[in-house]
Image 1 (cartoon, rainbow, N blue to C red):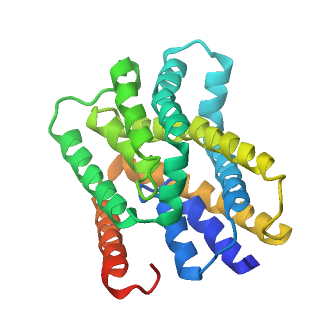
Image 2 (cartoon, rainbow, N blue to C red):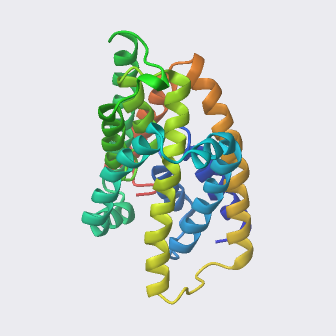
Length: 265
C-alpha cells in the first residue's frame, strides 16, 4: 500500500464511519478496487484510532459532562446499548472476520442498510410525539443497542442503524445523532481491543510501512471530524433518504459485479 492509497482509505474510513453508509463496506470495496492484498489488520486498527480522535474532539463537551457525573441515566443507557454488540462480537468474531474477508454478502448488506434507513424515517414521522433526552428509557437504549449489534456485519452501517434505532423510537433528532456518535466510542474501543489482541498474537508484525499508516490515520481523523460535524447538522433538519438511495445504488452495483461483470469481485 502506498501513501496515496492509505490517505484515500483513511479518508473514506473517516467519512463513512459517521455517515450512514457503512465504513466497513466501503473499505472492503476499495480494497477490491485497489487490489490490495496485504493484511489490513494493523491499518484498520490505526484508522479506527483516527476516527476515535475525531469523536473526542467534536463531542468533548458531551464526554466531559458524562465524566463529571458518571452516575446518570445517559451513562446507563450507553452501557446498556453497548452490551448486545459485545455479546455478538465475542460469540461470532471468527464468522464476522470471514464475512469481511469474503465480501460475499456486501451487496445485500448495503441494500439492507438502505431499507432500514427508509423504514426508520417513516416510523419517526408517523408514530407519535418526539421524545426529548429526558424521556429516553431503557427500552430505547436496548433497541439502539440491538441495531448496533446487527451492524457488525460488513456493509451494514453502524451509524445508520443506531440512528435508525433512535429515530424509530421517536427520540429528538439532535439527541439521536449525539447518542449514536457517543455510542461509537465504546464500539470503536472494543474493536481496537480485539484488533490489538490479534496483533499481539501475530507479534505486531509491520505489514504496511510506517508512512502510509501515519497518513491513513491522519486522514481518518481529519475527515472524521468534518463528517461528524456534517451529520450533526444534517440529521436535525434533513431526511436520511438520500443516504438510503446512495447505498441502495451501491448495493445493486456490487451485486451486479459479483454475479455478472466480475471487474472487482
